[in-house]
Length: 297
Ligand SMILES: Nc1ncnc2c1ncn2[C@@H]1O[C@H](COP(=O)(O)OP(=O)(O)OP(=O)(O)O)[C@@H](O)[C@H]1O
Ligand SMILES: [Mg+2]
Image (tube, rainbow, N blue to C red; front, side, top):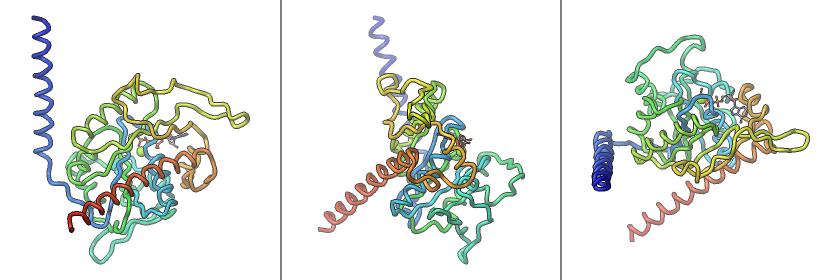
Protein backbone atom coordinates (compact mmCIF):
# COMPACT_ATOMS: atom_id res chain seq x y z
CA UNK A 1 0.00 0.00 0.00
CA UNK A 2 2.79 2.40 1.03
CA UNK A 3 4.66 1.50 -2.16
CA UNK A 4 1.55 2.17 -4.25
CA UNK A 5 1.07 5.56 -2.60
CA UNK A 6 4.71 6.48 -3.21
CA UNK A 7 4.41 5.45 -6.89
CA UNK A 8 1.25 7.58 -7.26
CA UNK A 9 2.96 10.55 -5.59
CA UNK A 10 5.99 10.21 -7.83
CA UNK A 11 3.98 10.02 -11.04
CA UNK A 12 1.87 12.99 -9.87
CA UNK A 13 4.99 15.08 -9.16
CA UNK A 14 6.51 14.10 -12.55
CA UNK A 15 3.28 15.13 -14.29
CA UNK A 16 3.22 18.39 -12.33
CA UNK A 17 6.82 19.18 -13.32
CA UNK A 18 6.08 18.45 -17.00
CA UNK A 19 2.97 20.61 -16.78
CA UNK A 20 4.95 23.47 -15.19
CA UNK A 21 7.67 23.22 -17.85
CA UNK A 22 5.02 23.24 -20.62
CA UNK A 23 3.36 26.30 -19.07
CA UNK A 24 6.69 28.14 -18.76
CA UNK A 25 7.57 27.35 -22.37
CA UNK A 26 4.10 28.44 -23.59
CA UNK A 27 4.24 31.79 -21.81
CA UNK A 28 7.64 32.66 -23.28
CA UNK A 29 7.70 35.40 -25.90
CA UNK A 30 9.20 34.41 -29.25
CA UNK A 31 13.00 34.56 -29.09
CA UNK A 32 14.45 36.82 -31.77
CA UNK A 33 17.97 36.32 -33.10
CA UNK A 34 20.33 39.31 -32.97
CA UNK A 35 21.09 40.25 -36.58
CA UNK A 36 24.74 39.59 -37.42
CA UNK A 37 25.48 37.82 -34.12
CA UNK A 38 26.11 34.11 -34.63
CA UNK A 39 26.30 32.90 -31.03
CA UNK A 40 25.42 34.18 -27.58
CA UNK A 41 27.13 32.67 -24.56
CA UNK A 42 25.92 33.59 -21.08
CA UNK A 43 28.28 33.43 -18.10
CA UNK A 44 26.24 32.73 -14.97
CA UNK A 45 26.25 31.53 -11.40
CA UNK A 46 23.79 31.48 -8.55
CA UNK A 47 26.41 32.96 -6.21
CA UNK A 48 28.05 36.36 -6.15
CA UNK A 49 31.80 36.94 -6.17
CA UNK A 50 32.73 33.53 -7.59
CA UNK A 51 34.54 34.93 -10.66
CA UNK A 52 31.87 35.32 -13.38
CA UNK A 53 33.16 38.67 -14.65
CA UNK A 54 36.78 37.48 -14.48
CA UNK A 55 35.89 34.43 -16.54
CA UNK A 56 33.76 36.50 -18.97
CA UNK A 57 36.54 39.04 -19.66
CA UNK A 58 39.33 36.46 -20.05
CA UNK A 59 37.19 34.05 -22.05
CA UNK A 60 36.17 36.87 -24.44
CA UNK A 61 39.82 37.94 -24.91
CA UNK A 62 40.94 34.32 -25.45
CA UNK A 63 38.25 33.83 -28.08
CA UNK A 64 39.37 37.04 -29.81
CA UNK A 65 42.97 35.76 -29.79
CA UNK A 66 41.74 32.67 -31.67
CA UNK A 67 40.51 34.99 -34.42
CA UNK A 68 36.82 35.08 -33.46
CA UNK A 69 34.88 38.34 -33.72
CA UNK A 70 33.83 38.85 -30.12
CA UNK A 71 31.58 41.14 -28.09
CA UNK A 72 31.24 41.35 -24.32
CA UNK A 73 28.01 42.63 -22.81
CA UNK A 74 27.97 43.44 -19.12
CA UNK A 75 24.54 42.28 -17.96
CA UNK A 76 25.22 43.35 -14.39
CA UNK A 77 23.15 46.53 -14.30
CA UNK A 78 23.70 47.28 -10.59
CA UNK A 79 27.34 46.24 -10.24
CA UNK A 80 29.03 46.58 -13.63
CA UNK A 81 32.70 45.51 -13.58
CA UNK A 82 33.48 45.01 -17.27
CA UNK A 83 34.58 48.67 -17.83
CA UNK A 84 37.17 48.20 -15.05
CA UNK A 85 38.34 44.78 -16.21
CA UNK A 86 38.55 45.82 -19.88
CA UNK A 87 39.87 49.32 -19.16
CA UNK A 88 37.07 51.10 -21.03
CA UNK A 89 35.75 54.20 -19.34
CA UNK A 90 34.56 56.59 -22.03
CA UNK A 91 30.90 57.04 -22.88
CA UNK A 92 29.96 55.14 -26.06
CA UNK A 93 28.93 57.07 -29.17
CA UNK A 94 25.72 56.53 -31.11
CA UNK A 95 25.55 55.88 -34.86
CA UNK A 96 23.13 57.46 -37.35
CA UNK A 97 20.63 54.62 -36.75
CA UNK A 98 20.57 55.62 -33.06
CA UNK A 99 22.44 52.43 -32.14
CA UNK A 100 25.07 52.51 -29.38
CA UNK A 101 28.54 51.77 -30.75
CA UNK A 102 30.29 49.40 -28.31
CA UNK A 103 33.81 50.66 -27.54
CA UNK A 104 36.56 48.14 -28.22
CA UNK A 105 39.65 46.95 -26.36
CA UNK A 106 41.83 43.84 -26.81
CA UNK A 107 39.81 43.19 -30.01
CA UNK A 108 36.61 42.79 -28.01
CA UNK A 109 33.60 45.10 -28.44
CA UNK A 110 32.25 45.90 -24.96
CA UNK A 111 29.12 47.49 -23.58
CA UNK A 112 28.09 48.06 -19.99
CA UNK A 113 25.63 50.13 -18.00
CA UNK A 114 28.75 51.37 -16.22
CA UNK A 115 29.67 53.28 -19.42
CA UNK A 116 26.30 55.03 -19.51
CA UNK A 117 25.85 56.05 -15.88
CA UNK A 118 28.06 58.16 -13.57
CA UNK A 119 30.35 55.91 -11.46
CA UNK A 120 28.98 57.15 -8.15
CA UNK A 121 25.30 57.32 -9.19
CA UNK A 122 23.03 54.73 -7.58
CA UNK A 123 20.75 52.84 -9.98
CA UNK A 124 17.38 52.36 -8.31
CA UNK A 125 15.42 50.32 -10.83
CA UNK A 126 12.89 47.58 -10.54
CA UNK A 127 12.32 44.51 -12.71
CA UNK A 128 10.78 46.00 -15.88
CA UNK A 129 13.36 48.82 -16.09
CA UNK A 130 16.21 46.37 -15.62
CA UNK A 131 14.75 44.16 -18.33
CA UNK A 132 14.37 47.05 -20.77
CA UNK A 133 17.92 48.25 -20.03
CA UNK A 134 19.24 44.79 -20.93
CA UNK A 135 17.20 44.74 -24.11
CA UNK A 136 18.55 48.21 -25.05
CA UNK A 137 22.16 47.10 -24.53
CA UNK A 138 21.48 43.91 -26.46
CA UNK A 139 19.25 45.04 -29.32
CA UNK A 140 19.93 48.77 -29.46
CA UNK A 141 23.67 48.41 -30.04
CA UNK A 142 25.73 48.01 -33.19
CA UNK A 143 27.17 44.56 -32.38
CA UNK A 144 27.22 43.10 -35.88
CA UNK A 145 29.19 41.28 -37.18
CA UNK A 146 30.07 38.95 -34.31
CA UNK A 147 30.90 35.28 -34.05
CA UNK A 148 30.28 35.27 -30.31
CA UNK A 149 28.63 37.68 -27.91
CA UNK A 150 29.65 36.83 -24.33
CA UNK A 151 27.21 38.08 -21.68
CA UNK A 152 28.37 38.53 -18.10
CA UNK A 153 25.43 38.28 -15.68
CA UNK A 154 24.78 39.25 -12.06
CA UNK A 155 24.48 36.51 -9.42
CA UNK A 156 21.29 34.48 -9.21
CA UNK A 157 18.52 33.81 -11.66
CA UNK A 158 16.66 37.13 -11.59
CA UNK A 159 15.26 39.67 -14.06
CA UNK A 160 18.38 39.86 -16.22
CA UNK A 161 18.53 36.10 -16.75
CA UNK A 162 14.82 35.86 -17.48
CA UNK A 163 14.91 38.80 -19.88
CA UNK A 164 17.84 37.27 -21.74
CA UNK A 165 16.47 33.76 -21.98
CA UNK A 166 12.95 34.87 -22.91
CA UNK A 167 13.84 37.23 -25.73
CA UNK A 168 17.06 35.92 -27.25
CA UNK A 169 18.20 32.53 -28.51
CA UNK A 170 21.11 31.68 -26.22
CA UNK A 171 23.66 29.28 -27.69
CA UNK A 172 24.71 28.09 -24.26
CA UNK A 173 25.50 28.92 -20.67
CA UNK A 174 28.88 28.63 -18.98
CA UNK A 175 28.42 28.23 -15.24
CA UNK A 176 31.07 29.47 -12.83
CA UNK A 177 31.33 28.27 -9.26
CA UNK A 178 33.67 28.02 -6.35
CA UNK A 179 33.70 24.51 -4.87
CA UNK A 180 32.01 25.18 -1.52
CA UNK A 181 28.66 23.51 -0.94
CA UNK A 182 26.58 26.70 -0.75
CA UNK A 183 27.86 27.81 -4.17
CA UNK A 184 27.57 24.37 -5.77
CA UNK A 185 23.97 23.99 -4.56
CA UNK A 186 22.83 27.29 -6.13
CA UNK A 187 24.83 26.55 -9.27
CA UNK A 188 22.88 23.30 -9.65
CA UNK A 189 19.61 25.19 -9.07
CA UNK A 190 20.61 27.72 -11.75
CA UNK A 191 21.43 24.86 -14.14
CA UNK A 192 17.95 23.44 -13.52
CA UNK A 193 16.37 26.77 -14.49
CA UNK A 194 18.26 26.91 -17.78
CA UNK A 195 17.41 23.28 -18.38
CA UNK A 196 13.69 24.05 -17.93
CA UNK A 197 13.93 26.97 -20.30
CA UNK A 198 15.66 24.69 -22.82
CA UNK A 199 18.90 26.67 -22.84
CA UNK A 200 21.92 24.35 -23.27
CA UNK A 201 24.55 24.26 -20.52
CA UNK A 202 28.05 24.20 -22.01
CA UNK A 203 29.78 23.23 -18.78
CA UNK A 204 31.23 24.44 -15.52
CA UNK A 205 34.26 26.57 -14.72
CA UNK A 206 35.47 25.76 -11.24
CA UNK A 207 37.24 28.67 -9.59
CA UNK A 208 39.54 29.09 -6.60
CA UNK A 209 39.59 25.48 -5.33
CA UNK A 210 43.39 25.49 -5.03
CA UNK A 211 46.44 27.67 -5.44
CA UNK A 212 49.88 26.89 -6.84
CA UNK A 213 53.07 27.58 -4.91
CA UNK A 214 55.30 30.01 -6.85
CA UNK A 215 58.47 28.25 -5.66
CA UNK A 216 57.77 24.55 -6.02
CA UNK A 217 54.55 24.43 -8.09
CA UNK A 218 52.88 22.45 -5.30
CA UNK A 219 49.07 22.58 -5.44
CA UNK A 220 47.57 23.74 -2.16
CA UNK A 221 43.98 22.45 -2.07
CA UNK A 222 41.42 24.52 -0.14
CA UNK A 223 38.50 22.22 -0.95
CA UNK A 224 38.07 18.62 -2.00
CA UNK A 225 37.56 18.22 -5.77
CA UNK A 226 33.91 18.41 -6.77
CA UNK A 227 33.06 15.18 -8.56
CA UNK A 228 30.16 14.06 -10.71
CA UNK A 229 29.52 11.14 -8.35
CA UNK A 230 29.06 13.43 -5.32
CA UNK A 231 26.99 15.93 -7.37
CA UNK A 232 25.38 13.97 -10.23
CA UNK A 233 23.42 17.00 -11.47
CA UNK A 234 26.49 19.20 -11.80
CA UNK A 235 27.43 19.96 -15.44
CA UNK A 236 30.75 18.75 -16.85
CA UNK A 237 33.73 20.68 -15.48
CA UNK A 238 35.65 22.29 -18.36
CA UNK A 239 38.50 23.92 -16.42
CA UNK A 240 39.52 24.48 -12.81
CA UNK A 241 41.19 27.86 -12.19
CA UNK A 242 43.54 28.38 -9.24
CA UNK A 243 43.23 31.25 -6.78
CA UNK A 244 46.06 33.49 -7.92
CA UNK A 245 47.12 37.06 -7.24
CA UNK A 246 47.96 37.65 -10.93
CA UNK A 247 44.34 36.93 -11.90
CA UNK A 248 43.10 39.36 -9.24
CA UNK A 249 45.66 42.08 -10.07
CA UNK A 250 44.92 41.86 -13.79
CA UNK A 251 41.20 42.24 -13.11
CA UNK A 252 41.84 45.37 -11.03
CA UNK A 253 44.29 46.93 -13.47
CA UNK A 254 42.15 46.55 -16.58
CA UNK A 255 44.34 44.08 -18.47
CA UNK A 256 42.95 40.52 -18.34
CA UNK A 257 45.54 37.89 -17.41
CA UNK A 258 45.35 36.27 -20.88
CA UNK A 259 46.60 39.59 -22.31
CA UNK A 260 49.09 40.62 -19.62
CA UNK A 261 50.59 37.17 -19.00
CA UNK A 262 49.77 35.23 -22.17
CA UNK A 263 52.19 32.39 -21.38
CA UNK A 264 51.07 31.86 -17.78
CA UNK A 265 49.32 28.67 -16.64
CA UNK A 266 46.14 30.70 -15.99
CA UNK A 267 46.16 32.07 -19.53
CA UNK A 268 46.63 28.52 -20.84
CA UNK A 269 43.54 27.37 -18.92
CA UNK A 270 41.41 30.22 -20.31
CA UNK A 271 42.77 29.52 -23.81
CA UNK A 272 41.88 25.84 -23.42
CA UNK A 273 38.33 26.81 -22.46
CA UNK A 274 38.03 29.21 -25.40
CA UNK A 275 39.41 26.66 -27.87
CA UNK A 276 37.01 23.97 -26.66
CA UNK A 277 33.95 26.23 -26.93
CA UNK A 278 35.09 27.77 -30.23
CA UNK A 279 35.58 24.28 -31.77
CA UNK A 280 32.11 23.24 -30.60
CA UNK A 281 30.56 26.37 -32.13
CA UNK A 282 32.37 25.85 -35.43
CA UNK A 283 31.28 22.20 -35.58
CA UNK A 284 27.69 23.30 -34.95
CA UNK A 285 27.92 25.87 -37.74
CA UNK A 286 29.35 23.30 -40.19
CA UNK A 287 26.53 20.87 -39.32
CA UNK A 288 23.93 23.61 -39.88
CA UNK A 289 25.47 24.57 -43.22
CA UNK A 290 25.57 20.92 -44.36
CA UNK A 291 21.93 20.51 -43.34
CA UNK A 292 21.00 23.65 -45.33
CA UNK A 293 22.87 22.36 -48.43
CA UNK A 294 21.15 18.95 -48.12
CA UNK A 295 17.74 20.63 -47.91
CA UNK A 296 18.55 22.66 -51.06
CA UNK A 297 19.21 19.41 -53.00
N1 LIG B 1 41.00 32.69 -9.74
C1 LIG B 1 41.07 33.84 -9.10
N2 LIG B 1 42.17 34.18 -8.37
C2 LIG B 1 42.25 35.35 -7.69
N3 LIG B 1 41.28 36.27 -7.66
C3 LIG B 1 40.16 35.99 -8.36
C4 LIG B 1 39.99 34.78 -9.12
N4 LIG B 1 38.77 34.81 -9.71
C5 LIG B 1 38.22 35.99 -9.35
N5 LIG B 1 39.05 36.68 -8.54
C6 LIG B 1 38.80 37.99 -7.91
O1 LIG B 1 37.63 37.85 -7.08
C7 LIG B 1 36.87 39.04 -7.15
C8 LIG B 1 35.47 38.68 -7.63
O2 LIG B 1 35.56 38.23 -8.97
P1 LIG B 1 34.48 38.62 -10.05
O3 LIG B 1 34.14 40.07 -9.98
O4 LIG B 1 34.94 38.07 -11.35
O5 LIG B 1 33.25 37.76 -9.47
P2 LIG B 1 31.73 37.82 -9.90
O6 LIG B 1 31.19 36.45 -9.75
O7 LIG B 1 31.60 38.45 -11.23
O8 LIG B 1 31.15 38.79 -8.79
P3 LIG B 1 29.67 39.46 -8.79
O9 LIG B 1 28.74 38.35 -8.39
O10 LIG B 1 29.79 40.53 -7.76
O11 LIG B 1 29.41 39.96 -10.17
C9 LIG B 1 37.60 40.00 -8.09
O12 LIG B 1 38.38 40.86 -7.33
C10 LIG B 1 38.49 39.07 -8.92
O13 LIG B 1 39.68 39.72 -9.36
MG1 LIG C 1 30.47 40.16 -11.86
